Image (cartoon, rainbow, N blue to C red):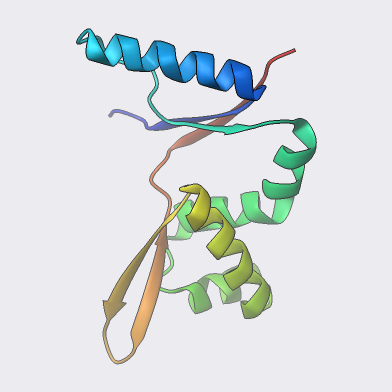
Length: 124
């Protein structure tokens, strides 16, 4: 089984650009990138503001329970639907989840986590 690993980093804009350029050069030369999935923040304050405990709980619940809809997810974790929708929108914009539209009796949006592992790396 091949696990998808998302690396969440905190690094300066300059370091991010330097790393992106190095990755581009490697891809252009035909080399593989060791871990192509990375989400980077400019500082720890932004990381903490965006990746909250409640949003991490959402990611875990989506991965574990595979809810059929956002409504079902809100019921599973016993949170208000409006706040869950707000957090889902943030996670989707960041690419941490995908939203699949489907229909049975009603239109539903199924949240899905495509990663098996998240790790945080902070450069000093």
